[in-house]
Length: 171
Image (cartoon, rainbow, N blue to C red):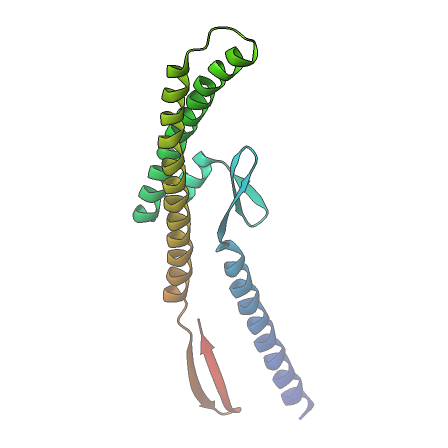
């Protein structure tokens, strides 16, 4: 009788170990599907996946499996570069005549007009870049969640054997 009881205890202990192992596997898989977040600081965009900061290059490498997301982020990157160049150049062209006027030299206001036009083009490009970036990251995060949920389809069944009835959960 005690041998039968010992066997039953070992069996329950083994089932508990299996359950804890499956729970650990499930929890660790959730850790790998961390979202990418986009922030903005003084120097530009800041990308984070969990605690890890990503560069543009790493962000593109991470989102490459989701082609729509990758295309949007790539477009955002190119528009961000173009708007930065136009904005910097336009600001410099506006600043030159202002500096000349403050220095009481002869001013060339055509430079200020051209610079203002460049800044005027850079601002919408920057907004569009931000829009594409947010859409691309949101699409990647949504795809990442749904692909995990598609793969995770647990199956619950009622099992009966000589030891009794029980529930079986398959992942």
